[in-house]
Image (cartoon, rainbow, N blue to C red; front, side, top):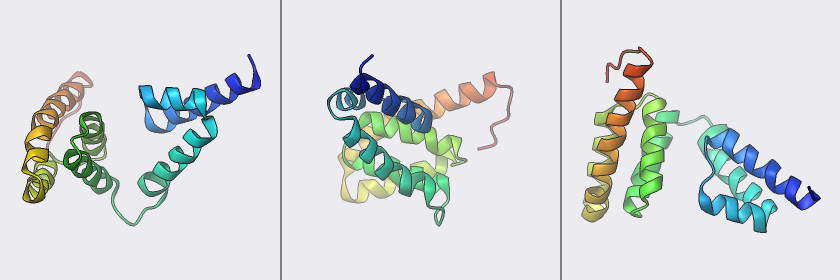
Length: 135
């Protein structure tokens, strides 16, 4: 394994460990420019995970809203999952999507089926783990 291959592997493993996944584009960027991916990753991690003025669930609800506004399906799904895991309620996420609709009705209507699907996935995961879901 060359030093470039080691660097690519190292950065991808860090992204996957910190974020739980590495999407296709992150793998491509890691192969082409691992230093750039690392800088982008650090930029994301700082406000989402290292700063603490806002509750974690609120940060993810904001990200759901921003991704809905931009019609970014994978972002809506991933951030909905993260928001639920951080303790957000379905109602909190729905209210945020309704606010998105004030500026971008299509963003909300595009995101809504994805969000509801992730609600169901979350409920199934919780019930499989034997935990209660009081949301």
